[in-house]
Amino acid sequence: MRHPLFPLFLFLGAILLEIFGFAWVGGAVGALSTVALVVVTAAVGLLIFRIQGFAHWRRMQELLARGELPARDLIEAWLLVVAAVLLLVPGFFSDIIGFALLVPPLRASAASGLLRRRAVWTSAKPPPQSASPDRETIEGEYRKRDNGHLTDRHDR
Image (cartoon, rainbow, N blue to C red; front, side):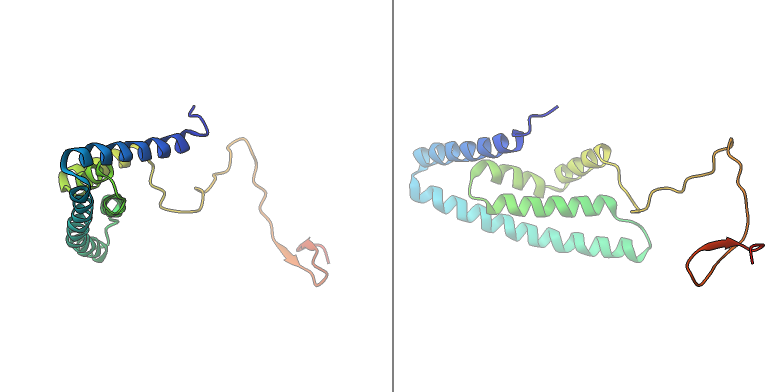
């Protein structure tokens, strides 16, 4: 079982990793080039996201028009949104993951992995319960009186 603070540790680890990435790239190419690189990767990533997002949207509409449930396409669309958010977050490691999710074969592989791990619920209602074979079902009629009590049809 995971520790309850695992998400916090994961978040802090990601921040430290991004800070390390800034320091490493900034030391190699300079501070101004590092900032420019972050802005350019965000702009290019969002442009690619916009193009792929519209194509994905059209494909989902076509599937829905044919009466098919686009479960895989919905997951891939969600992964495109995650990619866009990761590209907007300043940092090189988040950009690497974001750009990886923009590559269609890698995104399809990630979607397949998510589909294998998660069950897809198509209804909010639980399945109907069948009567147990060892129980006897008694059928009858009833009516509701004005006072709100239920009676059988023989009770007058």
